[in-house]
Image (cartoon, rainbow, N blue to C red):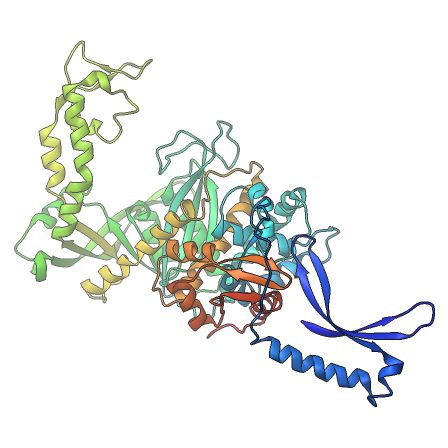
Length: 571
């Protein structure tokens, strides 16, 4: 940006005017100037102009207007060698910053930490950790080492980041509620719930990190996360539980929190069969007056349900081999009283049963590898042991393992492939059951409601893969809690961005494009942009954030990040 510079000589106090150009020097991290035109001493210019300062300010304004569209010629020394890195900076995080400020998370963290006696800015640390978690996930140390990729104030140390985690953790519940209240027009008639776990590459256990049933079949200590999500795939809230907590034991406490803190009325809770317990169903319908849609195991169901599933005469046959039926069924349940006694009651629920040929084929394809391994185990048992036989052992009879080595023992009986077990499982391929309290909804409506659960399953995959939430590198419980709050905020922001882009792109595609939207410093005020694709163009059209130019001035880049902090929340 050009401006009029006034320099006063010390020995005679004469004022000299010049037109200079200010530009940001990324190496020295401060603004430098370059003289564009020397004008002369003010007292001499007054002989020619009544008001030289006003006159030349107008001249500068006109020059700045022309500068926006001018062609710039630059000289480069082709013999220069590369230094460390290419000083590439990210422009791609601009839409993430826009959503961060739309949610007023800067206000949240600034207000809650303004009276703290610390020398660092916690809001700036949170932004670095959130944006890094989305675009370049890894340890807190890695985020700090790559902080210069962002056009942000990162005047803090690595130790400051770890100190800040303790303070961030203190506000984890309030932050979730704040985000919920700042998402306009959120529909919570349906809330989806699921549980997953995250592992730590350590053997040590504590109150939170416990060895339990790992989703990834790892022996490491884990922590359980229960996550609520709305029908559009945007997270509502989460909580952490010790790693040895059963999935089904996490729902009620979180439902109480939603009703008390989030002020939700009647909701329909949607979850998979792991949450389908008598206690969860009764609590939702009787205590909270909520509804539920849960999947129900068919293969592991009681005989009466299996007989009903296989009875073909009352199915409604649809196209492509799809068939469906339903009934209202009185579910007899036994529950424990507060005093330790037990009582029996009944819930009238609707059972929706359906069969899809493509699900049938998928089940057989998913099983094929385990079946092939089981047949190999029978043929060459010495090539397998207890750990390598996972998933296939149930299809082998007479299978014994040495308790010390884990090797398969063949001294008494040779392993035999269990054909009857395979045939028994194949009977249920393609059949699914859903149970619900919503007796008045059609079968198709219930199936469509349940189908939305795939979004929360995808969210867990995103946090574990794209956001690399595990393994967890921090060890203190308050740091662990803060780590997952950062992951939660990151997931909310990227989900909102996906929705803002009309759900045209997968989360992985969006993250990849944002990460490639870099610029490289050329000289003086200019940066070279080196990536553009359909995602970047859609961001320009939908969010008015334009990083599609070939070359941008530093002032233009500053304006982008300044404007996204002021953008109103779309309704």
